[in-house]
Image 1: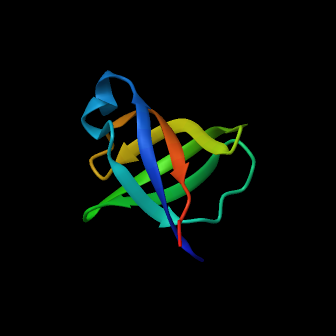
Image 2: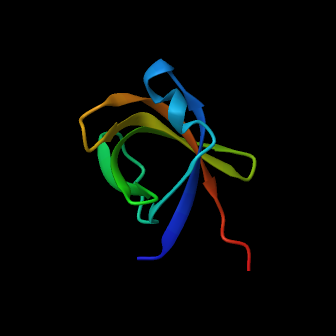
Image 3: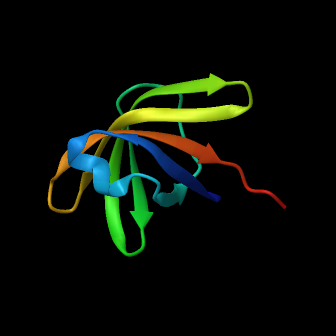
Length: 85
C-alpha cells in the first residue's frame, strides 16, 4: 500500500493537542463506517475509527474517533493531503 498523509483539522477537548498535526498511514480506505485504521505521528501509533467520509469539491474529509496507545479517545476531522509530484 502507498503511504498517505492526513491533517487533523477538527478536534474536541480530548484531542485538541493533535490539532494541525499530520499523521501517516496506508491509503487503503474503504467507504464504510466502523473501519479501523492504524495511523502514525512521529513514533506514536493511533487507531482511527472512520465514521464518515465526505467528498467536497476536490477535498476528502474523514470524521471519526481516534485513540492512542494509552486508550485516550476523542473525535477528530482529518483532511486527506494528496501527494504532489
